[in-house]
Image (cartoon, rainbow, N blue to C red; front, side, top):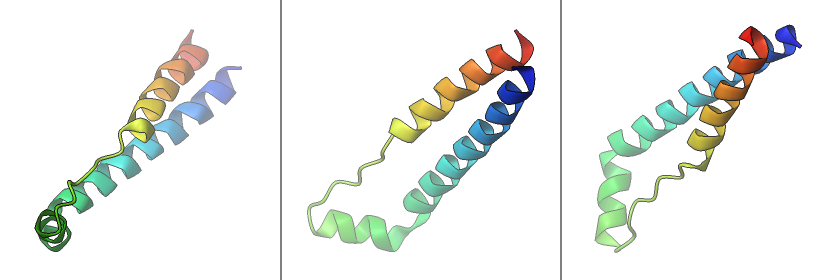
Length: 66
């Protein structure tokens, strides 16, 4: 159970890092941001993967060290 929790913890951290990188790429891309503003499309950030990743980190930490 502890090994499974540790593996889940590592992959959850990786998922969180990927979400942060995607967020930074979207916000850093001025071309995409300006095009969306010109066409009246509000830039939408999907926070569901962030919340799922944080939940999995909490669960896996409890499994690994609880």
